[in-house]
Length: 423
Image 1: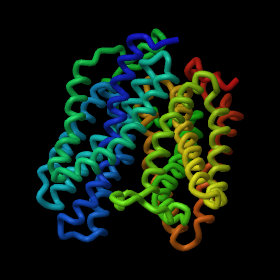
Image 2: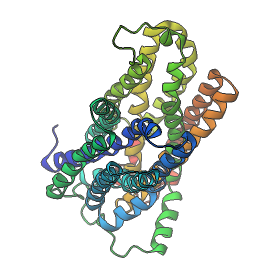
Image 3: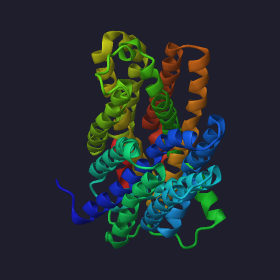
Image 4: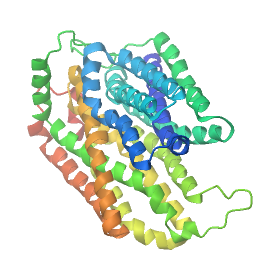
């Protein structure tokens, strides 16, 4: 069944927002290389500056979700797009590390509100939720792959300041599009259920809503998302470096004239492209497979892939490529399932808050694996690193089993009608 007009409008609006969040996010490391050469500042100092931009991206998800419930998700997404575009215009004018820091912090704050607001909008406004989650995920992966590709390509021909300004242009166009977009943000909510902006939101209401969420199945879902974030951040952060160090890839002869091309980088980008297929298939399956059961199966596959990675590197270039493609497919296929689980097990009027906590777990707590994984890689071995990553996936299996088994005790009588989907 095709999408209705309201679903299509929300899909287009959120896909643009999701793609651009990751378009900006993944272009920043490309600029870092140029900034290190441009400014007389050490790597450690610039690392702190870039971290100042990425930190609000995760930590701001919770207040972003609160604001989405307070002012409505459409207003938040448009503000996000405007803020990110303005941040890159600030970067284009930067003549010092201090201005760069200001631009990056502005980007992080603006970007942080997207995921709770955009996913809250899909969950309350879309009837074909699984299909739109799929296309939404594909758009995000497109932004992840295109951001660094476009930035790196433009930097071959243009000054970095001009490239930063050019990258802001799609965001500005998206703001114009977003202001004119028309849709019903609560079309998928049953009559009589309050899912609109909460004009009376207070600290006491926030505490009360949070207590209610964590006294329900959402407590397990939050833990599920946190361990998925640990797996996701750890793997995607270190996989490029791991691929560069593999003998089967490092020994490849690059044709004359292409000496600057790194085959490992193309394998990594290919993984992200295959992830688009995973997002689509995972999103479509959420309409057919109950959330907890889908999470159990996908976490189990991710655990096996992590444990198989080191033996797989002995299979040569073809084996590594197939393994990375398989990994990319399943890593991104799991995301629509936990996004849908939030929609299934939480009330519509706290959906922004729910997704705020969700992405605090994904991007905030999940980032801990960057530090832990770095220590394991540096002090132990590649095998120990992938064993650690597999442990995160196995924890996800156990938590998903708990969600499946304990749902009747953890979800109150006011749960959404489709929360029985695992029955």
